[in-house]
Length: 590
Picture 1 (cartoon, rainbow, N blue to C red):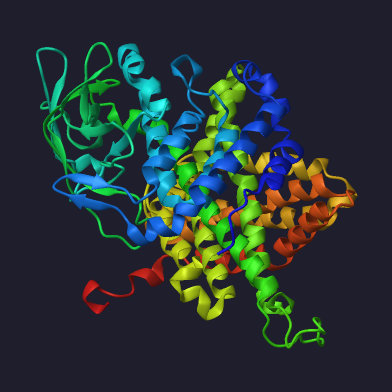
Picture 2 (picture 1 turned 60 degrees about the vertical axis):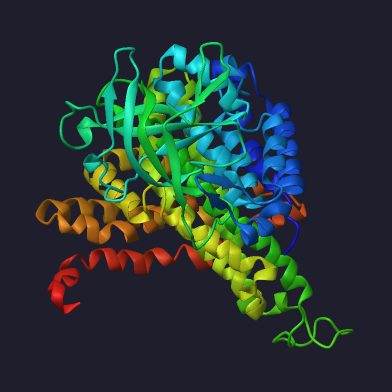
């Protein structure tokens, strides 16, 4: 496998030339004080070094060794504790954290790039700081000042880790039926009891403490999701002076044996009257948890992008070096027995598909991250409201489309290697296995599609969609004739999505099954159209610049519009086929 190199040039292009993020940061008062173009560049440069030099070399060995469970103790693979300490000492766990509690205070648009680099280097390793950051988000937004002061500094510093404990053996998507209970105590604490499964980083040897955020129900809680509360439950109790006290009444019952991310500890966690403290208000736990969901679901989407990027880097190196057969137009490498496989049209198809999906995904994830920054930091109420609506609409697309395209990219990368792609030592098969989980956790992609169509599109009567479509139409209207080769197919794709959206809203009024029947394909039509918007903006930034980077960008844009965007037509036909064919068979006829 090729050594990982952070795609810093493309990240700078997206942030500085496509979106002019430094200009935006200067209009957001809190960010203007902590970040500018030079600061962002320095942070990305350092992140590229630590991920490439210290984390990426552990990716294969971590997969080979995996985590070990012994009587409740979990040991991570060799090299992980040392690398995690190095990562934490650099302040990377708290890159987006509030400086008042020891974080760097960077915008999401920067931390999104750091997340991509980390997950390209090793998705399994990246999950540990990611879960800590997610827990910090909920604590910061909803916990009392006392809890924030007590826990956030050590979590941002990477001295303590975090986990999110939602799923139970019988309750996954339907969290309203969880059984974990929280009994109030006279001192204001709670005794939390229950079993949680699929808990990433629930137990490990990377930090001295793990702060679990646990969904549970109070004794008098109303039924369903309206009766869920959120509790902070530390692995080791923390004394009033901040020192560690006795071990809490919780344990890791086992770790899962998985298809991928072997070096990430996926735990069964048992809470046996463990001491915890409520985060936020009673019976408002889902709202507190969903504070981090927009960030975390974008983060999972970035994981799909990251594995696709790592696969591409290996595939392009292999395609330039591996010689097999002659080019259809005649020998290219005259001094060799055969030509490098990059001369073959089908190999180029796979490589360009990977490149177009990765670079489109990087632009899209950065765009969503910028909306998160506006929603969080702007002092303009209207701008915040508009950005919040954009984030709500685009988050399920970012999670599902980025990961679906990430898996496609990793499979293409494996295919470029031919038989060697199936062999473990080349690393491509690991990326396929690791990427697969991104379509499943943090809400399966089918659930994301239902959220997009059912809640955001149909649920708003198309209003949330129209706001995004209007922005794209504004871009189209402002484009000059030099952009016509990109703007016209974008206009046609948007017209198609407009019509499909209106059709689906009307159909859903007549038959509620239409939402679920159409949702996945609709999300993909939406995703390709959103990528077309990204590629048109990137083409605008690259036009007229005679450097290899910009020529490559324009060539990839042309490939996207010629070979990938047309996928929307078959997907649209599938949506318009309706739900009837899904219900022709009785359950026993399957």
